[in-house]
Amino acid sequence: MGFKGFILKKAIAAIITVVVIVCVNFVIFRIAPGDPIRMMFRDPRISAEQLEEMRHKYHLDGSMGEQFVYYMKSMAQGDLGISFGSKRPVLELIIERVPNTLMLVLTALTCAIFIGISLGAFAGWRSGTKIDTMILSTALAFYSIPTFALGILLLLLFAYVIPIFPLGGMVTPAAGLHGFAYLRDLLWHMCLPAFTVTLWYIGEYVLFTRSSMMDVLHQDFILTARAKGLKESVVLRTHALRNALLPVVTITGVNLGFAVAGVIEAETVYSWPGAGMLVYDAVMKRDYPLLQGVFLLFACSVVLANFTIDLIYGYIDPRIKVGEG
Image (cartoon, rainbow, N blue to C red; front, side):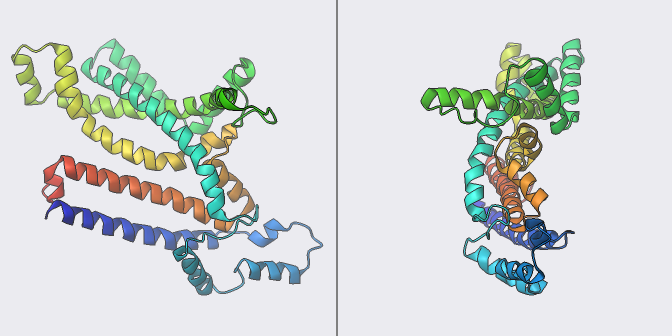
């Protein structure tokens, strides 16, 4: 099977996965307890006729099959529905919030990749030493702490006890800042959320890179490089690290897909107005269309990340693209 056939096979698998996700995405929120219309109108003076009128408006009065047909037709037209809470198109809300999440995710992942790979490679190189034990213990500690717990601890320490950073938000409310002053205020607010996500991902990258580095350092080509009299720094950088990064490429792509959904906790703790905070608000309000739209975005981002990684691996390793690996 050539590379084109490999791409076609992976593309078909990705499309089937997305279709299954769309179907599950519809059912899972319909079987959840609670009446979304009643959640929207808590006033006891609202009559049953008015509630029924709202159910008809949002197409919730038909059978499950009728609702599914309407849902699929709307999806095919790029219509994700109207949010129950804000009364705005779901797609408009998602487009408005996703850039804020991507800003946070890309900043955190970039820092985590650089620091985590460096520390993991060094720990693997110095395996068994005190510095390796210290790096490994610290990485395990950060990787084990839930993001929301780490965020609360950092918020308590650096925003309350030592008030260096703001308690939350994306910019200072009603500050009227523009240009460089606005950018500085934005970065100031983003420091703690990005630092929280970075610390969690650093632990993961340290563990993966260290394990991969230790495996590569025992390969025959490393012994050959050392036998040639090459400096240890050259062996580490040119021969060991480049080969140890292959598994790291995989988790980077997967992390990029999952990170869009994974920052829900961090965004909630720091009141960062991104897609994660949007999910929290939607859950609290039983906002079916908004939840469906956001979770579809999360699922598709993971599928796209896996598809991209498959293609990269298929291009790098011929054994994979021809079905031999």
